Length: 109
Image 1 (cartoon, rainbow, N blue to C red):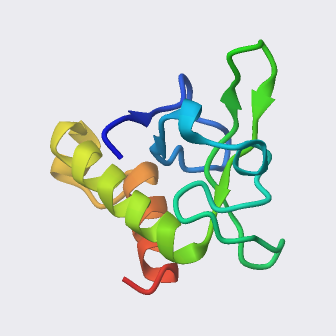
Image 2 (cartoon, helix red, strand yellow):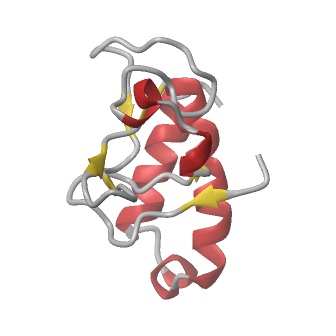
């Protein structure tokens, strides 16, 4: 997975997880029926919202992932986020970092 996409804004209450390139995602991935990373079929109980994204056609995508893959994506996000975040540098109260750590733990990492 050479390319990843980031949402243009942070959705309320959802950690904006980096995704594979949107062009690599099928319709089932784009609507959240399959994990955006490993393609596992998802149920409402196990799916983790990866953050709504704008689609190329002006619509919206609703990708989701399994807990394990979302945990790995959250770990990658935290690695990119923390060194550049002024809040993370001085406190453990950064909402992005707290949400990422929660997803990492839920993913069993």
